[in-house]
Amino acid sequence: MGRISEETRSQKEEAIRAAMDRLLRGELPPGGKCDLSTLAADAGVTRTAFYPKKNRDGTVRPGPYQHLADEFERRLKLLQDAGTVVDPRAAQIQRLKDLNASLENRLAKQNAELDELKEFQQLALSRIAAQHLEIERLRAEKAAGGKFATLLPRRPQATGTIGSCS
Image 1 (tube, rainbow, N blue to C red):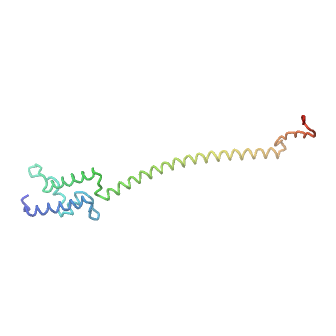
Image 2 (cartoon, rainbow, N blue to C red; image 1 turned 135 degrees about the vertical axis):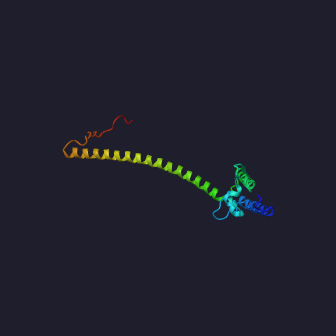
Image 3 (cartoon, helix red, strand yellow; image 1 turned 30 degrees about the vertical axis):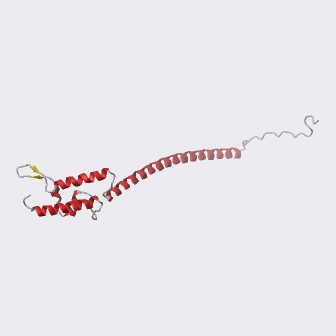
């Protein structure tokens, strides 16, 4: 802590808070996300300043800007819980996941319908094949001189009146 002056520390904290506000408003730099790495890069500090440090004796001390990292994560979680999408990439990823799920459902339905149609096609083809075989059998029977069909005798037509007409 003694390596930087209070004035420099104060300026860095102001830069971090300004960068934090920009990121939480959704003003992300190209290729950046709403995370600590982007916050550090945007504020001009090292990312390690947001994490705890170990002293030489093994004890742990907070990083110089760890309290700001905690504040950033807390505010980000509050926005996310409220339904605000800070990171447009995260929104795009969620939209694409939803689209993918709906397309997978649609594909599953179409595959089921296709399976039904293949079954129907197979049934229709087997019926047509059976009918074709029957037709060929009947043609062969007729060609061999067999009785193809039995004609019923015609009923004689009446020449007179049937019943009383009075």
